[in-house]
Length: 269
Image (tube, rainbow, N blue to C red; front, top):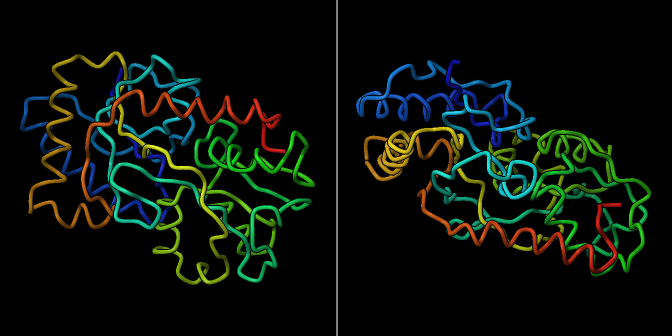
C-alpha cells in the first residue's frame, strides 16, 4: 500500500504551486530524517471530506468537526496552523458569512427566506459554526427558502459573486486565499458577519502511522515554520506557525452542535 499526502482544505487550482512547494520542503526533511517510500507529490484529487482517513494517509489536513464525528479514532493531529489571515487569532479561526456586494442584508436576520449555500453537511466552518450562529434567531424554524449542499467552499464564493445564491459561510482562511488568487471576483462579495470561533484545521496522519514517524512528521513541520530558508514556503500559504492545540478544544466543537439542537435548529434549513 502506497502512502499518500494531500492538502485538500486549501486547494484552489491556483494554489497548486505553493502547495507543492510546501510538500517538497516537508518531504526533503522527512527523507533526511530517514523516512523511505515517501509520496513523490501531493494527491490533488482527495476531497476535503473523504470517505475515511485510511492507513495510507501519511500527511493531510482535515477539518476539526469531522475529526470529532465521522473520522473519530481515524487520525492523529500533527499540529494546528496559525495563519496570517483576517478572522484568525493564533491557532483559532472562524467562518465568514458572505453575501453579494450589493446585497441589502445588514445582519444575519436579513438572510431569512433566501438561498443559502453550504459546502458539506460535515463541514465545521461551512455548516457547524454557521448553524450555531443562526440557531438563536431561527427559534426552531427553517430560516431559508432553501439550503443547498454544493461540495465546495470556493465554488460557493464564486456562485455568490455571480448572484447564484444569497449567502454562504466559508472558512476565513479559504476566503483569504480566494481573495488573493481571484482578485477579479473579490469585489463582488462582502463579509456580513462572523461565526463563533474554532481551532483551525489541523494537519493529520493516519492512526496507523508508527509513533516514530509521527514524531518525525511533527519535527519536520516545526522546521518548516521556524527556519528562515522556508520563508517563501510559509508566505505562499500564509503560515505564521504550527502549534499544539489540546484535544478538548476540538471536542468543544460538539458543544456547538448540541447547543444548536437544543435551540431546535439541528440542521441548516
